[in-house]
Length: 464
Image 1 (cartoon, helix red, strand yellow):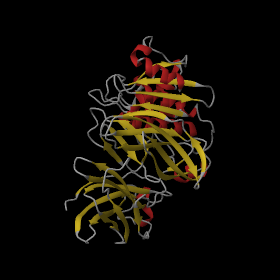
Image 2 (cartoon, helix red, strand yellow):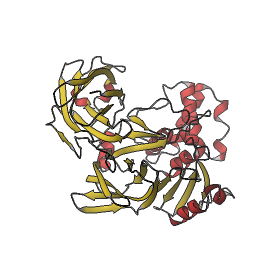
Image 3 (cartoon, helix red, strand yellow):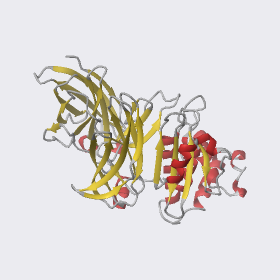
């Protein structure tokens, strides 16, 4: 029996509730709050199941190795996979470090991602985390049953971010994994907040003949109470199947525990896949937000100051333009301080909420919308990034991957204040989406946008 395993780093502090879950898997009793989960995908060519595993290491498990501003904690992760005869097929280990300043972060944790592929059978997966300072050990076990035959669809993989893999996407970020032409920021049992309320899904459909299936999303509370349901979208699948994916904006959902369901209705089967998530309230934002520094600009180098200055073009008045580049390093610091002091909604308090929110959007735009290829354009400079930074996340998103002669496109809809719609088209097919039409008079539209999309896509946009 051959089992292949690849482990990948997920070292970012992801403040999400996370627990063992599997439709055909039976987790053991958790030990020392270490958590483990797995999502399964089928590969018919090799009759193997690809298992994407996720382990969450809480920072409460760790003690500092060194203290001070540059102090570090460290731990070692070991993954073991055994078959039904208790033969160990995989045993791999790797080390991680964590800045000590992150240990006090409420609900702080690190996500460890690993992948293995195996033939039909039942496998015992064990994840061990050993703190380097205290030698404290936590273990979690999970029983994974791989597919004995081709399933109609895979398990459901939830995502806090998703993007097309461009030509320059060679290195994956923390907690990211690649599925074909898609890069997914995995989020098993995620915790959403009012500021980060988008949740994505990825499901693979396995079918022998070409078909068009109706795909919809349902958000449920408890076992039966449906709180959100999307209209079915017709998704074409070729012979052998394909993928269905999308992002759903859940802003306004009351705090609580929920189930995220994806329903795939084909010619002769209707299959539902479900995964849990939690919506937090404003107290969750406060608990998970890092402490704001007293002066963001005091210790930054000139290149770092320039990086913070660049996106301010979206906020500047005409009399503020053209000054910054003429200043000394100290002058640039003072310019940025004055710029944000004028826009502080709560003067006299320790935190400038507008400044924190703006740079949070810049960070999020860079993570979501960076464009690949030779240009390597940062996310804040892209069309999607600009709209995201100016107006925040849209209330509804329609994503359409390439189908036939239609190039990939996205439609964003804002409904909170006044209804606005933005259409982005990826003419390069490297994830470089350009704004081609909007009913927002403050943004440009291309006169030939309908011919760029094609008649079927235009109708799709008008219906959305």
